[in-house]
Image (cartoon, rainbow, N blue to C red):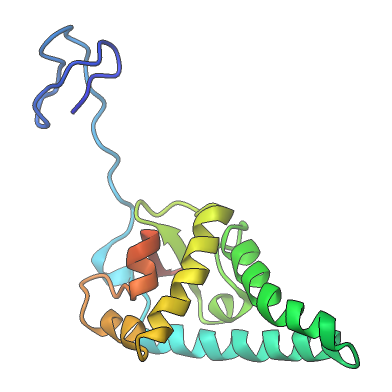
Length: 157
């Protein structure tokens, strides 16, 4: 651990800086408990609900305008997810319907930038034949690849 006061290296288990004596603050304790991770099936149903919402919205906007349709098809899902996950809801409409939220590893709300990274990391999860989604069945916190990349958790509300 690097002391924020003097910049000297101290043992990670130290309660005080070994050089200047500054008391270190204890590490933040996660408010997320093991039983609160969202089920894979709740996440899947939320994904289906969100896909329907985005498809309907995209269809309404793109009717009759091909150029706008291409932009909306790419930008729409990203903005929808990133704005919703970084909002006070911490969830898209589908996730909210399933009573689940997306948080940081410490249980706090994620930023728009982190939500954006998580959204685009989903493409990686999908491009490797869906394996990125499937690994959520095998991780202790039910994290898919995009959750691992973005350092996020999906938990029950």
